[in-house]
Image (cartoon, rainbow, N blue to C red; front, side, top):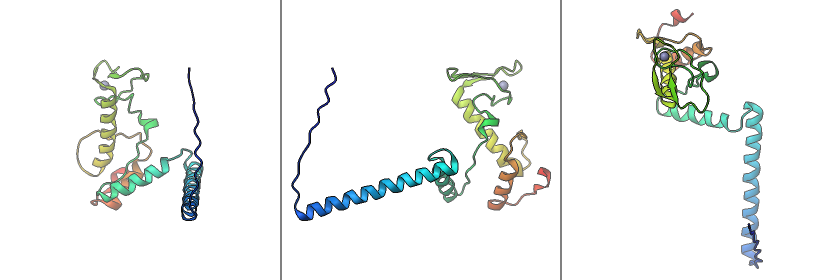
Length: 165
Ligand SMILES: [Zn+2]
């Protein structure tokens, strides 16, 4: 049986205490309304509460540490389905916790999350190495590649963007 008991205290604050309580209540109201307003406008802007805020914080924090914030096109990249070794897609359900590559020439086996993280890193490094002569395969199907190239050129070492044209 579930018993819920409610206890109500009646307090008799002094005038100074009453003023303080009233002030705190007003501050709580302000804070609540400010948070509500922020969530509402964020939702209207980004369609997903909180994401814009987090992205903003990350951009700022990573820039402070000398890096840059990179958002992966996960809908086209499909990191949980892609093989970190051969880049082939192997459909999985959430229950499949191990990546076993469907490419018969590869058959790469790895923990699902580790493989996905590797795919993300490879993709990100593809962007990273776009300015150098490194021979890592550079994914060509990502839509934001030019944007990233432009972003990197602003912030980091100069490079020749002519190949990307
Ligand atoms: Zn593979």
